Image (cartoon, rainbow, N blue to C red; front, top):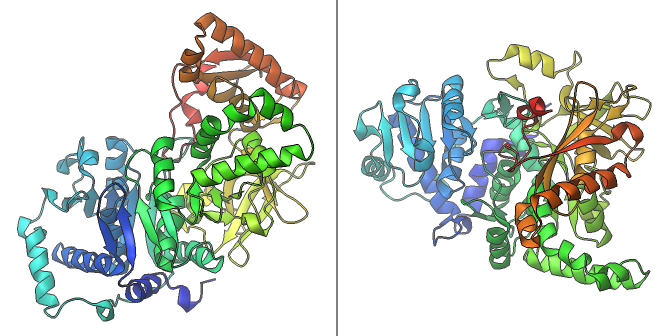
Length: 558
């Protein structure tokens, strides 16, 4: 099934560039550089000229790797509207991983931040004709005649092609069917080597359609874009949906620490906030936890009626910290700590959790906060866009989540075996997640199929649920629950060393505290879920760019 003609992906942006010509489109936060839709369209046209000069043909691949900035946005839109296929590479990938992706995808052009180019040589990527800087468009390395991609040369060709100037009426892109491939997006995966997700334009358009029809984005939208644009979540909504609606996005190119983000929220006052759990949890821990742990507040929170007054004040403080003008915050990319989620729902903070995956570009299910989202759920499947069912449910109704619909990939690039394994015989995409659907159609994720553990009598153990309880303990930054060969559970805990140092706690006292924490957590768990051993880990666990822990790196530590 294909989306109707008005959601032809290329035409969406042709219309938006024309209709919003004078409006601001993208701003590189921290600079005075803002591009209007018209200026963005001019940059896209110049890139089309560059592609032609380099001999790029329809369905050729063009890779882009670097921090969020307006040039990244221009390259992405220019590639798809030219008829080529974009290969976004997460800026946090190491050089050897980037080299593999560039070569595996067969990319012919590479647009890359100067810092990401370090560690890469042109002879390591033999199919690439030219590498161009995302910082300022200068050619970094060439296998072509330098005159072909010289900035001044392209500017001259642009003037020759448009001697009277380039205006809204001149924005006219070649027709592309939504059945055509739009992107090959390599997963950041937590279980090993990344795979190239083949996403048709229809899948990208399905996400944009939801953003537009839900009213989440509109032509007055203001976005603080700090999720990496190369990741499906940030790409679909912070970028593609925002610009499809005529909104304005501020691109954060630096590491999104709470300090930087809170300052940006205060200045920009976004209308919608997209975040991963880690960011919200850090802000919650720094701003809210110290308040609710104080004796007077903790006491009042237990008193009916009085607690509503305190909750209202905490909610207002948190809302103002995020700019005060957003409709809601959407959390995705990883599970949100249930205790954090429960408190935010208790204070009526406008927040909802969505569910998706790179293979669905990414959205599968979501229910807006003001339309009845339920605590701990990921909302309902997108009506008219995605279907969800539970495969082989157990007696509790828990089984693998499988999906189908407009947003799904067609397979993994050059990997027929992985493609075959990812679909059921009747065409449902396996997510690899365990979940349950309630009577109202809301989806609840219980954990990953690959991370689910078996208790001594075959009971299902979901380590993410235990980790959420550990992570909510004082002095804990993050944790991993793993299983020994004898089935006993081990908790690797990375302490919050800043808090530990501030408390003056010695290492011996820290070890004793963590043992007490183990007993406290065990008191809330079933007998088969008990943590037998706690091990301290010296630093944060290695994560994917969407901030999921790479579990496979730590299984040998128990």
